[in-house]
Length: 76
Length: 224
Image 1: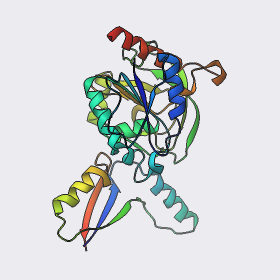
Image 2 (image 1 turned 90 degrees about the vertical axis):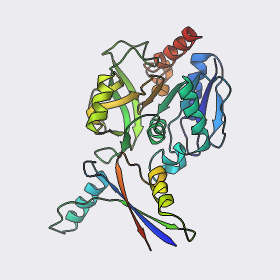
Image 3 (image 1 turned 180 degrees about the vertical axis):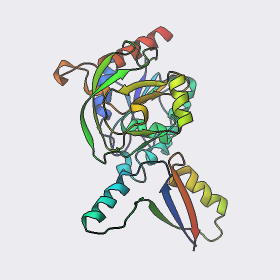
Image 4 (image 1 turned 30 degrees about the vertical axis):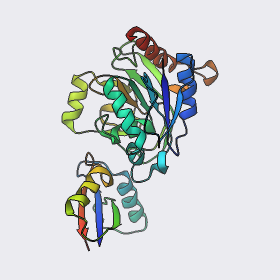
């Protein structure tokens, strides 16, 4: 069983990496990019039957820092 | 007086901090490896050093904060031992929940490595008792993730409770309210991005950091 964890910075949190990517896209001549936010994708290969609660706990305890980040779990 | 410096894979200021602790306490600190589950009995002072623990994987300080030794550090802090986290050590302390907030990538995106002007905001703490309130000092910084972040309510609370120990006197990394160092509620844990251990001897070019360590020792002696 696989799970993909998407970790993104919360709305009000500054993202210098996203800003740098935005500038680089503009430098390449791509117009119309309003904003860029960079995040992380973490893929977990899990034992079958791993509970949703456990996956959520993994996110809260380590994979995301909920002071500054949100996370979304997508099971495949 | 017993002191210890925690060593993670990727720590690189551990030996500098050990020199500062030894100069102030007169005894060599125990160097405690991240996999250890215990600290020396009745530890008085714990240093969480700068560096790039675990290669800054996932987030700066995230892996180190979950290493076995940090449970022992939290227990000692709870008991009242002084805990000083510098640079990566500050990141480890926020990630482990011993201090509120988080340290984000510097606002400009650049690694900042230079001396910075600081103001001592709270000179009552165990860490800052040898400074004057409002005193201007200068410590070196060397970090990529020093941009302190906390929600407005937390920031207000830190300010209201005198827990902002040090503030940048200039724009450095985008830190909320120019915060450079904060205390926990009990006042025995300090996290700071600047490096006091790099300015303790005349040969370093400045000695502003020495009083931080001397003040700690003075406080410990008074407490004993």
